[in-house]
Every structure is written in C-alpha cells, then in structure tokens.
Image (tube, rainbow, N blue to C red; front, side, top):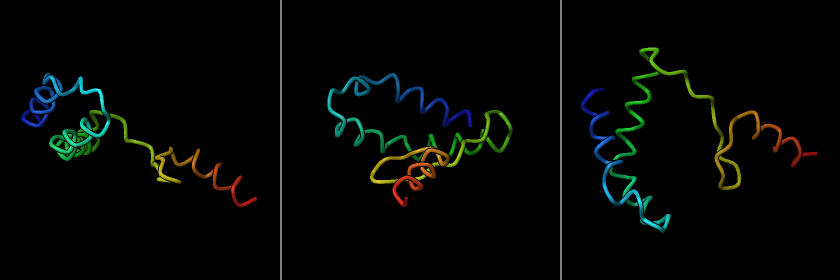
Length: 77
C-alpha cells in the first residue's frame, strides 16, 4: 500500500493535473486509476477507510445507489 500511495502522490504532483480539458486529464488518469482503486480496496479491507457506498451508472452518470433508485422510480412511474 505504501508504494502505491507514493505513486498516487507523485502522479498528483505532476503538472498534468492542471490540464484544462477533461479528455486530456482522463487519458492521463488511466495511468494511475487502477492503482488508486487497488489502494482504496486494500484500505477498506484493512479498516483504514470506510467502505464506499454502492453506485449505479444511470443515463451516463454515476449516482449513489439510493439516488439512482429514486430516479428509476420516478422514470418508471
């Protein structure tokens, strides 16, 4: 976890974090995204962080499960 944490901090310290376009930033995010996800999963399993709440992708947006359920109910009504 320490090595991945260090890699994440190094990535955040790079100048590309200031890219003005979302596409550029997201392309560079792919370099560290998997490592960040693994770090977070490990931290949750060790009890260092609180478990994430479930999320659902709905109409191209990622929403917390409770909000997505409410929105689905409104769409189905």
